[in-house]
Length: 292
Image (tube, rainbow, N blue to C red):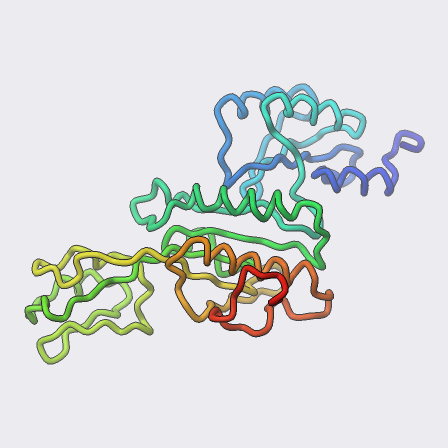
């Protein structure tokens, strides 16, 4: 510090650790990493104590489900980090790197089709921690949604995963009911009776699973779980909806390999290159980095 003021070099050095300067002050907000927004009650207590001891007592959530403690003086940053480390907490989540993974509460939500907590924790370990030392051309965001309700906007991230439940329609079991329960329950109008037979428009169907089990004759008794992956989304000064890969993945490892291919491409592309890896087709996705 020079004459009691934090220098630009000092500010840059702590920004890499997850500390962002509070406007017009020499104080900082410390960004604490969570895994999909979850922390324990004991960790919450520790954060509250740290915020009081070393900050201004204010704790807030970020848009990516990390936590920030405000008003930490520059010379208290290491004390703050040491205090929260007792509860297994770390700071970070800034810079041109893979950012902390965002997840909805699909594991406990009545509409959740996949275990979003488990999947996002696996992605956090594999990509946030696994790529922690990798400098990217730009920050890289991943989001996991449990169903097509899109609560965490997965398709506005560099990579977004949306849980799917693909209906297994048995035409032979369809009785051609005049009042079709499947047609009634379909929220997107993809299921329609035509010539006394149920038809499902695959272009309209978003695989939300709401039709599963509602037919009295078991025409759609079950479905196949899957993962729909969007790439190339962004929000900010300019926004873009990500584009879906050309298949729905029914194998989790294959879906994770698709994410890794996009992450590896982003790590090795030039800043001026497109965020979408060529060729843009799910059938060519591979776990081999040589294929990138």
